[in-house]
Image (cartoon, rainbow, N blue to C red; front, side):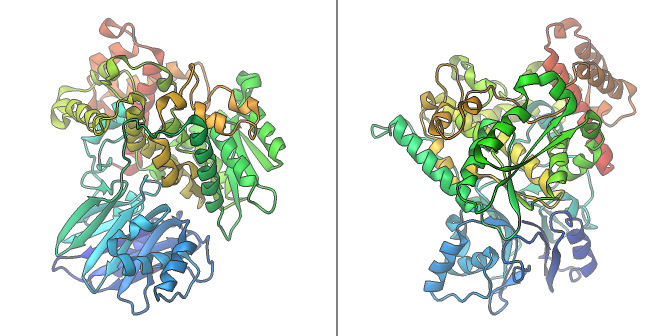
Length: 591
């Protein structure tokens, strides 16, 4: 796990500056505190910050092939690299290391850009092929690893994080106004745009080839939703496949030459992952959970800590529990915003605090991310969708009410209403399957899951900790997306088939407990405090967010006047939090 960056000067400007590349690379030091490397040759420059995990002695990057005609800078893990290495060796390729980086180089030599289809893992990498004067970038199928790029004054510039791009003198931090309403009303960005003008994310499951001054972005992988088939598997057959593939996914993700552990909240997903991991480790598995002291006082018997302890006792893990105060959560918002590079959602500060503690004990952790989006684990999936239509994103309701708060100029300039409608239509109607729930889950995977993965990546890498997500093995994802929804939700209970796949292995108290979100401080008065602070920011006229909102409508909204008199407190809580987070983002990046 690492941080990567690079510059391709395809114009006729001066040679690439060593200082610029080193400044970019140093901006990623938190992602790779163990080592750094650069490669500069006339019009191409690669930077790399290393978090050493596999082949600690020989895995330095940027790395080249035998004759230095192909170079790579790479972030991630290829879990099937030993299998690929054997296949490539049989084809005549010679290896100098035992790391997955070299496997990518030789895979590119053997298969060209189609090499990405061979990889089971999480990755973002750039390959420079001097023989063809070609720059090749790729990002993993589900978007576990981030990769950003921009083009300016004859330079193609890329990096694992936007803050590295901003170190280049050609790049200025400017707000992308199109992203403001997307963030506020969808809690997700709907395309390749970021919060920064002219800086794009390489879309998930895509590759980019830059040659002869032209960059071409191509999708190399996507899920395919199918109609129910006559040869559809039985419930028990699906259960068996889920158990087999998920256990193999966990086993593969335990490869490491450094200490590793597992997040264990006591919820369904982390319990399954941690339980499976204990079957494949030689010593006690290290597990970790967190909570806030006030939540413990209020939560009583339904506290995560109770269930995490139950799991730790059941599987004999070496468990550590971290208890925080509310002040800890609120004290790091601006720093978390700097790492996230966008306004932070509710649980990001909690993950940031947790990963800070983990670094003392492990370098790699397993996480249950992705299960909810695959199996239907959110409250929305337990509700019937009338007429099989969605007019707003189910994870971000109250779109009509809240979007009224924007001033007319922002609405006109961004065209956000049409963006929302077209995004919903694009993902919900891409496939003709009559299983509407699976179509909604596809929407979650393609948009909402990306926010969860970015949160996990950047809060962990802020402290040099690698997070691995076994539920997002593409073999498992391709199976689950087409399991009939009647197996996923049954009799008002979510994730039915996942629970039944592991009943008898995981304690019933875990399988049958009510879902809880990742911890953040619960304070009944927080709605009032946040409402007042957000309204103050807008009414003052001195904040950055004040320019986005209609003052009168915002005041009416927060005080439930006129057309907003029936608005839910949850909408007020979410909207006020989003406004404050947006202001902090402006402050963190001086925009």
